[in-house]
Image (tube, rainbow, N blue to C red; front, side):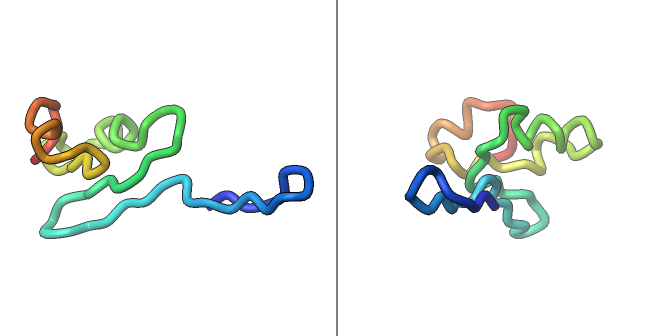
Length: 67
């Protein structure tokens, strides 16, 4: 989460949104610079167990990650 103030406006939002569904990690939103999928792979999570849910299903099938 990010929260605070930018000038006189409230700044609040989700930086990262992950879900675990049917034994897979679904990345719904990734606002990190590094990319959480890359970090998960570095930690030993197989690419086929990571779903880039922020892409539409047709695009997901053309990535190295799960569908």
